[in-house]
Image (cartoon, rainbow, N blue to C red; front, side, top):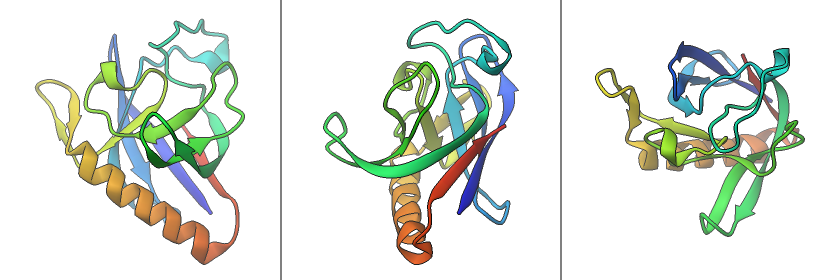
Length: 140
């Protein structure tokens, strides 16, 4: 199964976009750190840089920090333990990806992240069980 994250809005301290299912249907808003274009040779600033665009295998893994299963992206260059998790503003992501049900155009934050993450985790778990195939995410 293939899902995607489309980066759409770029700010000094954050990157906003959308998370799409295998049919290209919008599912949730996404929030990442600043896109420093690592795939083009950009320089990583620890805790303040979005991962490089690319295709990554995703698994559900236990997070001791989050005390539950979370989607984990594997083999991300220059990063470890990149997860999709609850996040409303850039201070919450530290290289990871946050998802939200809504977007606040005034603050440029995502909102209702807890609800979005619950939906996302259950949806991904069902897809993994249903397809019995690997799950991949392409970040554009």
